[in-house]
Amino acid sequence: MLIHCRRVYDPLLMDGAYRVLVDRVWPRGIRKQTLMLDEWCRELAPSPDLRTWFGHDPKRWRAFCERYYKELEASHNDIRQLLDHCGSRPLLLLYGARDTEHNNAKALQAFIEASFF
Image 1: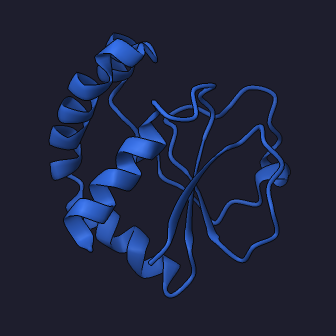
Image 2: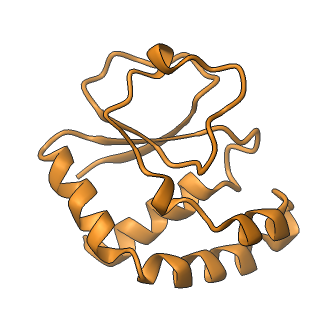
């Protein structure tokens, strides 16, 4: 299965992917119709405490991933259900962060690829 990540503020392609927002809060300035979501998985976003602690500081990236992966360990059923919903379609994880390399969608992608494939 192909898994991609993309900012909600970047132009979205009509690529047939299963589109999932993986942020806990709705991104500012984005209308729901714009994203054409298949699902909003708040439960797969980092906890508010972890998100606040991380603060999108690249120096904390490795520690953030370790802590986030521990949170995700309790969400295997939610992830399995998400993958079932995708079927054979590519999975597109959408996020609002400015940093395209150090964000929860990238961490979630790595977790899914390591744990489920």
